[in-house]
Length: 456
Image (cartoon, rainbow, N blue to C red; front, side):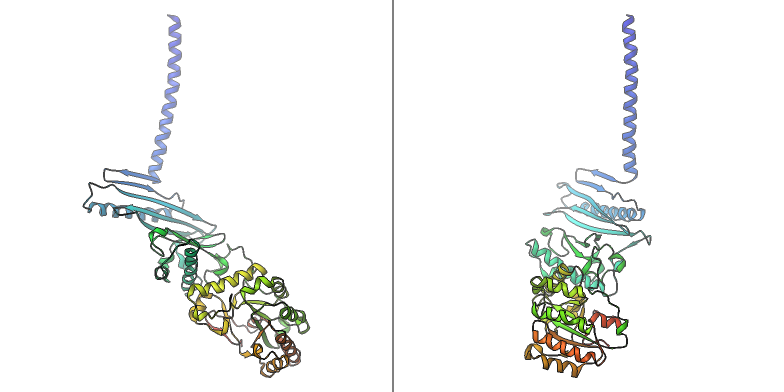
């Protein structure tokens, strides 16, 4: 009997401890549930007719959370109103659910909300909304706050067109071109969803904006190197590309009182002509501008790199020397971008200068290229005559301060003619500079909407 009492007291003590643990656990669970409910992190409603599941964004910024919550609540109310009017309310299960994506870098905190609604039909309907908070300025911002000028949205639209069509080609999809262009009109609402990431500006297009529902969400990435003059400089700092100009700086003070002339060479690089030119430039303290063809760059990598490293300016003459006026927008951008990529891969810096084949260009191509258009005012017609003395005499007779000379380094006679002209013009007080150096010396701020035949 005594033994039983002792054993009973031990059980009672153990039971109290066990009961206390259960109570503590239940309080913890209750507190967690209450906390989640209080912070509006998750909400679920279930009836015979519909299901609602809401994930509120776990974002620390109160402004973003408030805007997000208001948007979701408005969409939820719209959903309930819509299904209450449907005839088959009692025979179909409707659904409403939300998701979100948070993006963050050192300056910008963003939340991208996605709402899915099923009210009948073949698939869910999707609605997207994004909000961005600038930590430095302490305010909610949109894409327009990151644009460099009033032309930037138009340029962003054309760049996006290229990358959306590329996305279509890369994924074996057939996008309707008219639908793409409509969805990318230069309206800030069309560029509501974006992220600044390591490699560039990511832009998100929900279903039905640039493609039909079956294509799903379309995401493109525009490298920072292609956004100069489109996005404000302070937001290009995420770029891993350090060089913007592609010439080695040299002291230009010695040229300040001289007449300036820019020798430019198209259609290269070539082995004999280009290297012969490079071997002789130092004799005249000269640097020149090369407008290269993209499809020749890889074959003459060493020559191009040598030209760049010497301090000459490297520009684009497109990839295949096509008449840009006869190409659609996608093909135009492809001609320019492939060339710029090829140049970058060799010299590890960007090119900002374009000479369109045959000089054919219009305002649309200028906007698409986002480059400076450099034409010429002295056409030697070196390709036709292939006569070094004739080329040299033409240049000397027509030379003037600010002139841009058109030549081709494919031909050795053109190089010989250029060097003969330099020898004569040097004695007449001329300095031989790149197009970029000439603009700097003359304090001319180049404009991407203009074409430059000379720089004065």
